[in-house]
Length: 385
Length: 232
Ligand SMILES: Nc1ncnc2c1ncn2[C@@H]1O[C@H](COP(=O)(O)OP(=O)(O)O)[C@@H](O)[C@H]1O
Ligand SMILES: [Mg+2]
Image (cartoon, rainbow over all chains, first blue to last red; front, side):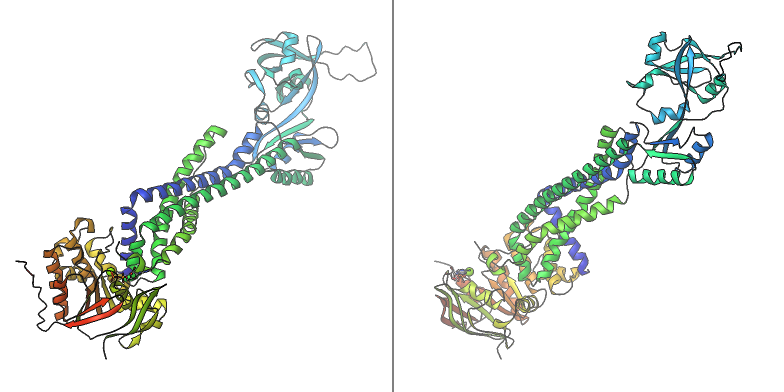
């Protein structure tokens, strides 16, 4: 039999025969490792989760023309500069004054599908318009005209007639019939608008579509957003991209706070784990004073004694780390489901990292008990009582 | 040259002279018994000879080398290479089997060899108990495992401190018989005992009193066989 085989046999036998005590240490390490790996998982995943979460607070970048209106081309070139996996939605808006029952109402035309993404917090009673001839009206407008989902209305539009005020000239108003699909409730001035597709507004007004503003929802840190905005400003002529400061900065503040929280909890958990392991190992060494004395009497060097106890510590740490990394994933998953309502994916690299961390912490915790093991005087402990 | 020689060895604990200028010579292959009342310094002397403890003063010549001045590490190596220890309380590792306990001694000495360890157990009549844990063995069987552990590395001296102190008569006889065999094979034995019957089978008995050698007796009709004194 090789020396190493005997070594492994000894430490496994020792761990297995001391099961109840070792289980406590194992549990402490596993819980420590679980919290550690869980927090790291959440922490790594949180920026993504959080930025998705913050996206529900609306657009975080606004594109406007430096003069006049944005063209579709401006919008397309800006979109082309945003990595497609980061772009949540881009909603270009055009505003025109139309008339319903001869009273002026502001009509907003946009890519309704994108608008739903850039403004996820909008509460719609009914549905977003999906087809031509469908319209969504703000709650204020709905009240004025006594509208409900399913009702019909007609919008008219008076084309510009030149300002010479020639009263003889008869101009026919454009008109289009719409069906109300939903009532928009935001608590803001969006409630005084009606929303339709770009195509419908173009048809109603007979004017080629241009936009006064385009709202972007992009996932990413504020630094990443800054880079994107600069890129757009630098390479698309005549436009100006601005970040919506309030949203992007609060995202960073939350992340920063979270980071210090995770760090603090990690330190506390590691310290507690170390205390528990050190206590267990101290008790183990105390229990085994005679055995250690005997080993020394048989000619074990200090190095062998250290090696044997470290071996037990390392096995304990590795087993605890493995259990902990799996528990940690479950822990992170539960938290993510509860807090962010979305699942996270397992990060395989975290398993060896957690095991390593558990081994290092256990090893460090074993230092003092092992030192006392080395100091045992065999002549003293082997004396009969 | 004697295998072992103690020259003016003293061990002093504060005021107490546990050993007081002890002079002893032990020849190679000799079987020596140490007797004396409790507290007379027998264990202290054994620990010093076994390189487990240091004398306060004096020389301990083992193979002509003074081990009194050796480093901690050198003493560890002496224990490993030259000494076989047997204790009254056995001191077996509870979570290792009988054969593993024997192999533990090989492990620190050189390389564990299960076959050799089983042979040693066979010599002490415990081959079929090799896979038993100490808690599954009787006191006598445990002490025989200890004998196997002590002899496995062919030490120059086997030191046994009251090896039969916890055994009944039958087991005592078995252990003494093992000593006799070891002696026949040329092993040097030093056995501390309270029991005159165990001392009588040795070639020579040294009696300690208050840390001093009180007297010494030579067993003229040495046989190595135990003779039970039957009370009339
Ligand atoms: N570590 C120690 N510290 C103080 N006194 C000790 C120590 N070890 C032994 N003694 C004392 O030395 C004397 C001899 O002890 P010991 O050698 O164990 O006697 P024996 O084995 O003959 O019964 C005793 O009086 C004992 O109390
Ligand atoms: Mg004693």
